[in-house]
Image (cartoon, rainbow, N blue to C red):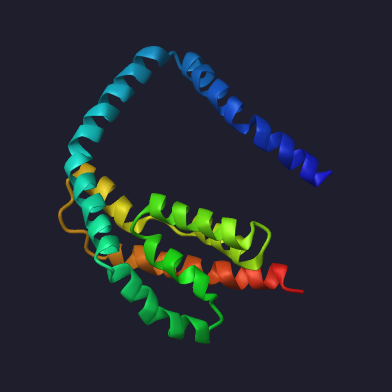
Length: 179
């Protein structure tokens, strides 16, 4: 019963939100279409403004991967992470996830194809992908859009969140899926 309710809610959640937004705007006497067009125009200007930051970050990620630095990081981290029970297949995902969401998604897809989506590694990879974030992408795009030049502690806090999400994903998957 609970699964059926969750399935129905997830199927209707987005259409209901899309219906409620114009309805709320109408009730508050907001010109919804004009507000949408104005917001889209501002979004386009923001996209143009952050483009240099985005290109710089993508080039840096490409250089990081192509230079072999990613492989060196993975090789250096594997023995340490194996000691705490982290499957070695997940180490490249842990390194790539804060850098690039697309790169991490590609690595997860490869893991799911090779290990299987119902394998422990596949479940861990999927949970890691949903529990961590693209910290450097977020800092680059959002801080670039806001014009923030000094991120202060945001990098440290973001990476601490990623590390916590990574290890908690492994811990929770081990608790749930290992009998």
